[in-house]
Image 1 (cartoon, rainbow, N blue to C red):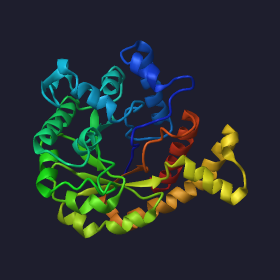
Image 2: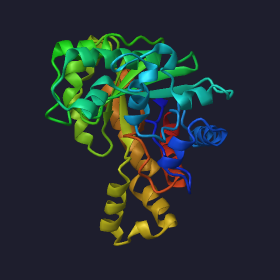
Image 3: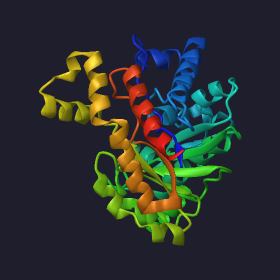
Length: 315
């Protein structure tokens, strides 16, 4: 099993998203991306995602919707379908990168709502596939982020629309799909382009009950299981319930809260359960979701270090 991360990460102190949008092509932003990527590696992440500092929808839609870059409405020309952060990491001597790409259903839903028109969905699907096609061999895993599938009851694509959305994805490495809920997992088993189904199970371990190892073997699928919580508000609320300490008032107290509620021992028990349930079908582990909401990069690193310590017991 490989320790990866979902992507998003706290911004460095003094930086906001407005600054990033204004300085996206700058050397300063490139250095920020490189430093944070190395931070993930040094924390023990084996397959780190590029640091996703930007809004997951806007960073793709801003390119896809730009008339200068369009082949058709919502269809980006292939030469423009590039992720700035991945291009920056190509300048480094790294050959193990994970790249998250916001999925066609999520992009569609954010633009148009739940009523799906196949022609627009198809163009968004082609656009997503072009971002993936422009990745090189240093990217070992692509993750299609579809947080609304199974969470938003309005979004109910048909089997044909699911095929339409994902059939064009072609990639030499692993293709994950990252879900916030396991409810949609059965509909994805027949999608040939998806290798790994990601489920958030640290915050709510009952999510594991929706998965079946026999199904995974039958359809030749693997799983990525979230084994560390990423809901920092929930972590600190639980810490307050236990110790009556408001950790938000102190950076050091936040570190203590993470070390207490999400200790290596707690995380190791989740890994153990996931291994018992899925055995060799467990391919990836890591935090449930991105860590953008953590108060600082130091706090996000603490969680990653705890995952590494927990996983080291299986090495």
